[in-house]
Image 1 (cartoon, rainbow, N blue to C red):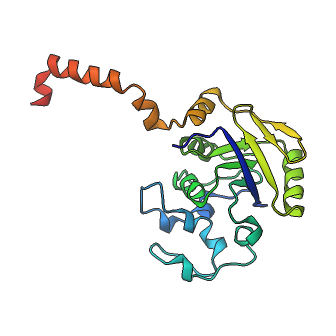
Image 2 (image 1 turned 45 degrees about the horizontal axis):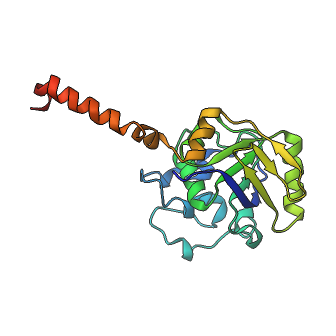
Image 3 (image 1 turned 90 degrees about the horizontal axis):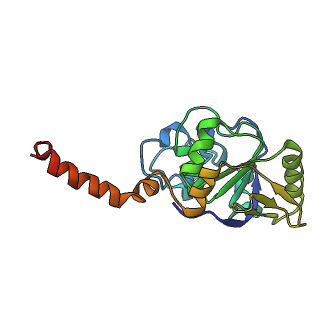
Length: 212
């Protein structure tokens, strides 16, 4: 998992509440357990005018010109601005995989579904909860200011607007440490690789019948 320390990124606004994981990545694309390759099908039913299936060449599919993420001004966005209860529905981990593969590194919103919120941290995607008044202001600024960017400083736990206005946010200390260091569950385990090897060597010597 890549480290997340500080991000200066273009913002894309998705002004919808209760966006569920089936909208983020439809069920027909869940056949793979690889973490990559889901970005082209993120928000598939909203981004394209036809019904998507695995294996289709997305370059040949007609795109919905009215969907915000298809607009030229938001291409390359790394920060997704959302409303309340984002990531509700089923607990599929493919949702943060798809968002990360699309190019997002942070999601700023009013609230998130619990399982989705937890899955984001495990996959290098930082979910940030801000007060509704701040979210409302950010939607207005983003929509009326082409190229609108935010700076997210995880170490300082601040979202900083271009005008210098800093918005503090809360984050669990352990999750913060993991993201700052790029530790996912596997990375955390590998920090104890030497102890694991020592245990296996001792176990093999004490209980050799288990390895026969």
